Image 1 (cartoon, rainbow, N blue to C red):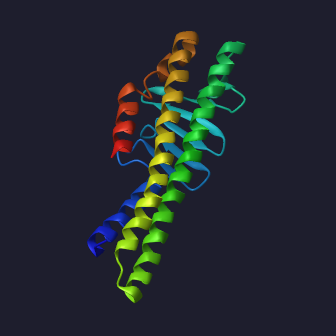
Image 2 (cartoon, rainbow, N blue to C red; image 1 turned 45 degrees about the horizontal axis):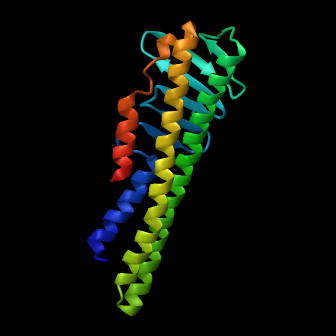
Image 3 (spheres, rainbow, N blue to C red; image 1 turned 45 degrees about the vertical axis):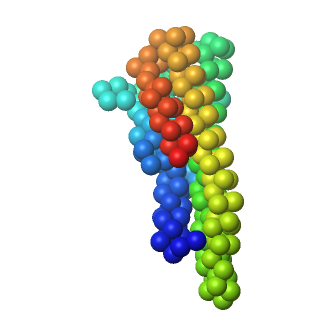
Length: 186
């Protein structure tokens, strides 16, 4: 592997920690996640939905919904969809962290490979190690796309079942899922 290629691999690792180059998902530590360019934020285990000219809504893991600080009355089917929404957002965070860790493993493999190649002169091993680790990054990133699709499904079901949720329609759109899958494909 050439040193310019290695440098590119290390830069990619840094980008992976932010998760997605289209700006749809950002993992900042283990307690704050931003999805859909800030349309959905997850702090600790509480999801907050943000839309322009609309009060914020919060969803708990238990499926409770508050809009502008007021509890919204929901039925069991709506609660189940709110729980699916929450589970999807929590999964984005979990898989985003795993993607970042996989990216860091690439950097570690690359650095170890550089150290070994300096002493042995064999740069081919670096490429093999980095390529093997990069497959893990792709696998974890693909999970994020599935998580976003799960959020969209719950979002669409909630829009159809719960009138109070309609202002939050479209936070995750079909284009977001398509973009995620394109980013994942390479």
